[in-house]
Image 1 (tube, rainbow, N blue to C red):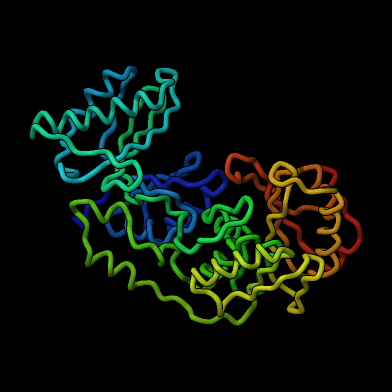
Image 2: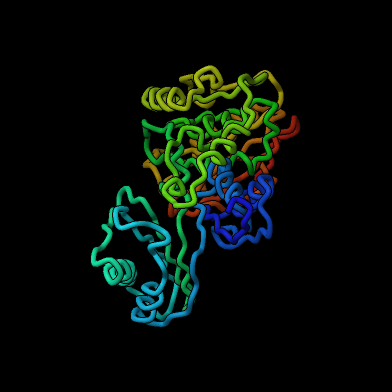
Length: 386
């Protein structure tokens, strides 16, 4: 069973597809194809375990178990009811259904989800005279249904809870970054993992925590105790332990990972989360305004997610962004700076020419991820007219 290969789908956030594809390639996945917010690949049970445990940008790892065409709810019900669900889980186990629809044939997501649930329940009832229960919060088996036009794909969700929930974040500030997005931002920054990493507006500490996990080669799933595949009939606990024990992590860094923020509440939240991630000795936490933050190392990466008008009510937003630009020019010569923002007008006040601009989504909000190369000559004013 461990050797059998099959197709899987890794879900991610918009803009992180290539990063995820590279992660999957690194763990040995084959036939990798990028899609919108997803990457399909082929692998065996070990690859599935590794994708869940090691991928920093995946949200869920799905294993398709049936595909068919349908243009009405009755056809969906019939096809799903015919599937041998008793081979997947037992009467004593609970299940839940997640459904995504992009189709001209279906516009009532909850109704289709209900029909799919009825089909599974009726499959058991017809054979055993009893039905399994639904548990929306903590099911034994999570089933994913994706409908595109008239094509229906039914998959088992091997992750269970979304993989971005690492287990370290217990304290929140306003609009915290999704952990998978934070990891993706760091990997997109091409940080060499051997020079300073600075987040001068750290909020609840997600970016510096993810940076430390990356630099120390600590798997993003190291704190998680449960995954969906642990409830599957083919769960191989020995193989799972082998996957976990095969990772060699570092214990110390020879450079600085700095998390700072002007807000004492943010620093308190960061401290709690850094402690939860078991990284207190690896991240330097400072309460400072951004313009007070400096580095004497002469190289590294600054990654910040500053307030933007759509997210927070910030007074004099343009002046705030001007000050960010001035601080970058003055305090971080030799660094690369990356800024995530949904405010294009405010970003023009940075006063530096962008060398790269990517599109990412912070929740439902479309953002741009800007790169600035802070050479010595960048103290001259190079305004980006885009």
